[in-house]
Amino acid sequence: MRVLSVTSELFPLIKTGGLADVAGALPAALAAEGVAMRTLLPGYRSVLAKLGGPTEVARFAELMGGPARLLAEGPDLLLLDAPHLYDRPGNPYLGPDGKDWPDNAQRYAALAWVARELAFDLLPDWQPDVVHGHDWQGALAMVYLALAERARPATVLTIHNIAFQGIFPASLLTELRLPAAAFTMAGLEYYGQIGFLKGGLAYADRITTVSPTYAEEIMTPEFGMGLEGVLQMRAQDLVGIINGIDPAIWNPAKDEHLTAPYDSRKLAARGQNKAALQARFDLAVAPDAPLFCVVSRLTTQKGMDLLLAALPELTAGGGQLALLGAGDAELEAGFTAAMTSYPGQVGAVIGYDEGLSHLLQGGSDAILIPSRFEPCGLTQLYGLRYGCLPVVARVGGLADTVVDANDAALADGVATGLQFAPVTLAALRAVLARAMRLYRDRPAWQQMQQRAMSRQFDWTRPAKLYAALYRDAIERRGLPASAA
Image (cartoon, rainbow, N blue to C red; front, side):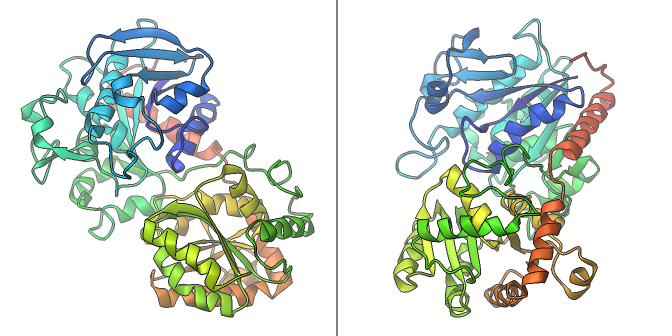
């Protein structure tokens, strides 16, 4: 079976969030299921600079405002080299002013259009059985294929975060090669504008999101972000599949980013990582202080405003916080100021550092994820793998992957972290106090760490579920699957 993955991010080439990790891990994971996946990625300046010498395999005289080439890097990676769209520095979506690039509609419509061409005969020796688009940036491929008046492959769209939808003026319809007939409530139209994600949801054969709980949540007004009606109509085609993590990259026994590698039988070695982390963040080197970490975008979605407000209680209880992240300027300033207000107890690095994120998991006692909504989340999975116990809001994938340390779960030895609800300041303060009390019960905390580290969240099961979904989508269209 051949699958084309259409994504705006791909680890390790370009990453702003979990989408890159998922898109990067799926091809290898699916190979074990007999799926040959090729990935189509924009040829951002930073991506092309990292590659040795990709080969041109197709050329476009005009693509959304200029010429473009399709490049191949090895057998599995295709890059859309369109300098007028992607030859820019920094963040793939945002300009130097921190605002969306004004031509993002054209940039990701171009990606989707090339996916359409690949689905037919752009490369005569390779056509996919399934086109799998990711988020709004890949969603228009579902639309282009559904509207093509010819036989087409099956389509699957994955929602990684429904908050980001790709909304653009209706005046762009012709420029984006979209027929006016598709601009309806049953198609692309979204409150008088073009909705990339909305259109993808309307036209994809199957829809996935990244956890079973989030699949249920997004069909409600509280979490659906205005698309709950569309999803309710497509409920029979919607499935939640928990993300996996790469156990080779996230392995505390062999992690070169740690001061001291360890496993569940050698938890004492975590103390060396904790000391190194405390020194790195200018925290008091105190072995017995409960050290919480955050690795996150600094946004209200992630509940970072609540955490900032809860710092007095966290620090008064003897806790420490080491934070790595970037985002809203006001929150960045708030956590930077907190380092002065709570010297030796709060440390922050504004930005992102992959190696430091590993040390945070390997040296902290707990990772805080107070998100107001969280489709899946990966940092809690890394925390489980590293014995850095997740303290999470009971939403989305966080609810699906962390077993709360209530009395029954502790007695049965199945607890792997702490949950709280609702997502309010009072509830966050209460769970922080509960975590610090439990931390001081060293046997109970260590048992939780060992249980957490025993959980399996690799890609084996998700890959089987995706492969089964692809087969179902192909069968629904009455198409035979090709050999890989």
